Each structure stands twice: as C-alpha cells, then as structure tokens.
Image 1 (cartoon, rainbow, N blue to C red):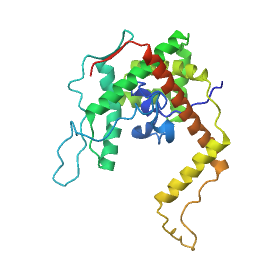
Image 2 (cartoon, one colour):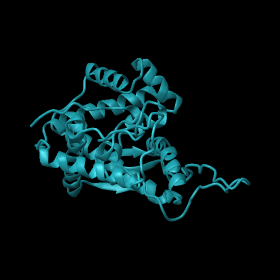
Image 3 (cartoon, rainbow, N blue to C red):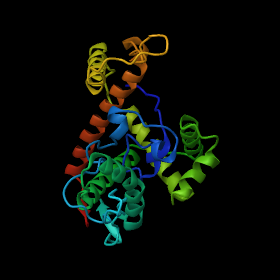
Image 4 (tube, rainbow, N blue to C red):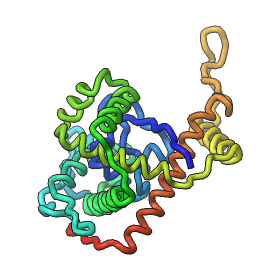
Length: 286
C-alpha cells in the first residue's frame, strides 16, 4: 500500500469527474499539456473516457469556401433529462451536457488534425459509460467510509491551482466559470476526487519495477527516433547539431515512474468498476 502524489492540471477536473484518473489537464485552458500515457487520456476507465472517432459526422458543419473544415458543434439537442441511474442515483442531462461540451472541443480538434470524422453518438455513449463508472466508484468510496471535509476540498483545489501554474484558487475557479462550470460543480467534483484518491491509496498497486521503466523509456526513445524519420540533424551556426539530445533514463525516471504508476492505478480502477458493475442496478437512457 502506498499513497502516490498526484500531478494535476485542471482540464478534466470538470468534465464531470467522468475522467477520474486524468481528472485534470489544462491544455485547452492554457495551463500546459497533460501528461502522456495513462495520465494523458485515462480516467478511471481509460478506454471509456476517450470518445471515439470515425463513423458519421453528426453535428458537423459544412466546410467553408476556403476548403478548410469548420469546427463542428456538440450535438446535445436530444440529451434526456436523466441520462442514467446508478443504484437509484441519477446522472442528470445537465451534468452530462456540461461534461460532453467540456471535452468536445478537444476531441473536435483532434478529429480535424487526424482527418477522421466524429461519431457523436458513440462519443456520448462512451461518456455515459464513463460517468456511470465514476458514480460506482464514488458510491463505493462512501460505503468504505471515505469522506472529504471542506478543508480537504480547499487543499485539493490549492494543489490543482499550484500544479497548473494558476496563481490562486480564485483564478482557477474563474477559469472554469468562463467555460460554464459553476463553483458548486467544481467543489462537488473535487469532493468526489478526494474520496476516490482515498480509495486509490488503499489499493494494492505494485511499485513500478526498473524493468518496466526501462522498457517504457526504450519504447519512447524508439518512437521519437521513428517520428524523426532518421533524417540527418540540421547543423547550427557553428556546425553543431541542432537536434536536442535525448535525456538519459535516470533523468526521466521520475516522470516514467509517475506514468507507469498512473497506468497501474487506471487498470486497478477499471477492474474495480467492472466488479462493481456486476452487482449494480444501472440504466443508461441515451
């Protein structure tokens, strides 16, 4: 058992906590990139939290005359008043819509960059499943006796602001409010994450081995080399190579440990969700 410090950047704090493990990542808010690997895209259910691309382009706008595709709009017209019930607890359409709109812009930008069309029906189904998984985890945390005091919530928001490069909690709240998230929702999501963190600390997650870290390092270096295409490095003004030197394994080890740990946590949470889902009464109404 161990408690792992969490590196948090706020983007996903407020995609309704549906993205538990990667609850943050202020990339779209101007606070820096989220971490790669599991932390970059994985929430409690890493796969479920990633909306799919491909299929129909529902809600997309026609391309303008200059040939550049315009940004599609989130299709939330037919979202029901109650999106799902989980053991009698409701996930409201309002909460779902806020979460969907919160992550839609990023997914639309990724779709444009990749050239793939967006399947909004599939995206909404995956988000609903992810929110159900989060609700199951929150209910489980409460049953285990975990709770978050006002002091815990404030400390969590202070940590989030600091790790995001935001000057204060007030500025953090203002950033989210500009995106349509109320302070009440922010604090509610923070409360849930505090309880989930308490649950994670009780999971028996093995510490990453040096072999795992070295394997990740080698694969990352190989991927970087492949991305560069083996092209010769450009020379600088004095004939020196302009290509940046690859950091050593020891230099990157702390980040590698954090990435592998996050992945292990995500896997453990995904497994726990599956266990909880087996005995749960769940209805998704999308």
